[in-house]
Length: 66
Image 1 (cartoon, rainbow, N blue to C red):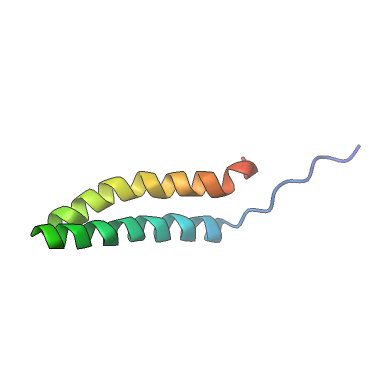
Image 2: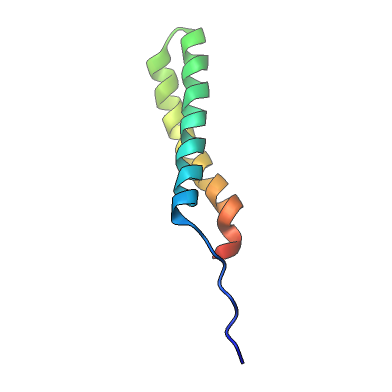
């Protein structure tokens, strides 16, 4: 019997999804913060929200490989 084939997962691609999603959330939050009058607070909120969103997007995209 042959072992089941493993899914081919590129760590660079998973890292790119994580970083890209996190930075996109931060950029949107900074824009909203800037419009509200405080870009640094927007950055802070974007970082706090962006990290879990980035992790969720990687799990959603590459969860089958676990």
